[in-house]
Length: 56
Image (cartoon, rainbow, N blue to C red; front, side):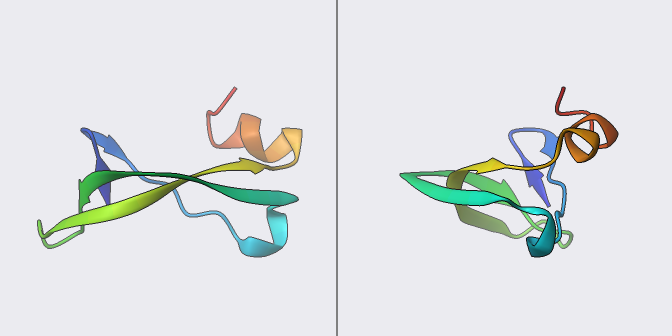
């Protein structure tokens, strides 16, 4: 999945400490190039995971 030219990353639900939809969305494309509207959310994950995925 690509969002605004950036690749989306999958995170296991078991690694998400908290999750809150923020009421807005963005457009992205799936692996077949099909455009999708995707909800945006704030989430809290462990620091080691954030570092590993390049979030911080």
